Image (cartoon, rainbow, N blue to C red; front, side, top):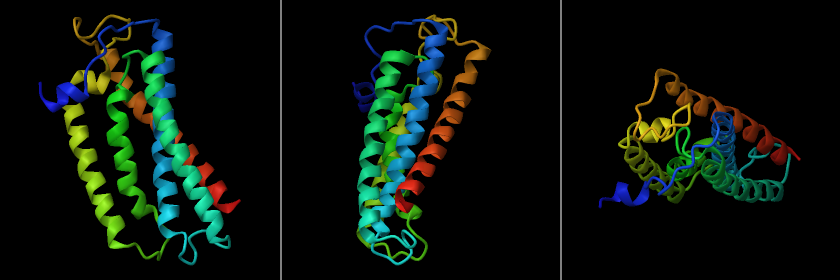
Length: 200
């Protein structure tokens, strides 16, 4: 059994549920995924650059630290909630958040130094951590992509049949763009919330 088989196991029993429930789980889990990843990246950037002039505008370094640690904790918790929603609501319909949550989280941390305040001095240590997180994120994402349709479109078809036994239909190809759109919406909202926290 290779690493991909160990990390990316399909659940032993997939409960198909209703098509509406599957869509609800898909949308909510990927909104949470986008929100959590963006919050983690933006908050990490605040923590990296809080002691530089202009990192939080006219606000104090303490405000940046509080917003940074609070946003980072919020992001990690919401990412965990995204995986939970994928298990209990989506139930295998759509790109499995349980497989994607680690590469997305590592990718968010890798992007944090590039979200730092303009002109902020970033220590080499942060750049090394960022590079390591990026390599790990790409490696894990490659493992998921190697799973093919299961990694990109989920195990359950739109009509509730197990896609491991029945081929996906053309309409099932919509679930991946829908997941991406939901993640973008969640990420945009998280960026707005972090901006309000930093300015508060």
